[in-house]
Image (cartoon, rainbow, N blue to C red; front, side):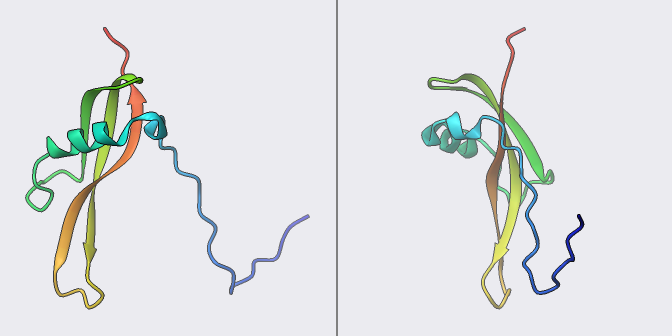
Length: 91
């Protein structure tokens, strides 16, 4: 059966793959984010960093540049947001 779309219903969110990000300790993510350049000056919108995380091993973290502003939008701020983590296989 097909469902009729309700225009007043909120849009459905698609699941996002974060990899093993939930297993990486927060202090390791914070340490990796401090090694990144200033997001306001960075040209790239996405940067990958490899770290040795506690209990997980070698991990590649993917950070995406996030833009946000106050409600009136007079000033824009930028920050790095960790979006994905994956194991790095040693070569």
